[in-house]
Image (cartoon, rainbow, N blue to C red):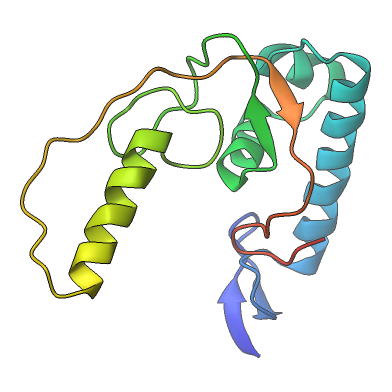
Length: 145
């Protein structure tokens, strides 16, 4: 195990692959369970309503979106943007068009082919309604719980 600083509190801790200490991880999981329970009862709630109804900070809800644990539903997203082209995204850091583009560039780079310059793709955003994403995908910086 190597020592890391927790991304949430900054404390030094022995990391087992996570970027968050056990105390903050437990607090984050408790916050996520609150959000999940709220969304089960209020499936059309947006991020602001989730924050107001659970007491979980807006930044934490956005982090759950970036981690892919939540995603927007069927209305314009507005707050969560692609890290590459700034288009609204439903989950994660990149929109579907940029993910496809980046996969293509990486594939070409891995096969030795030159990936020429290309303009970033743009696409329509998803929605602003949040929904729970089942934990079938591993969390970034954490373990699959």
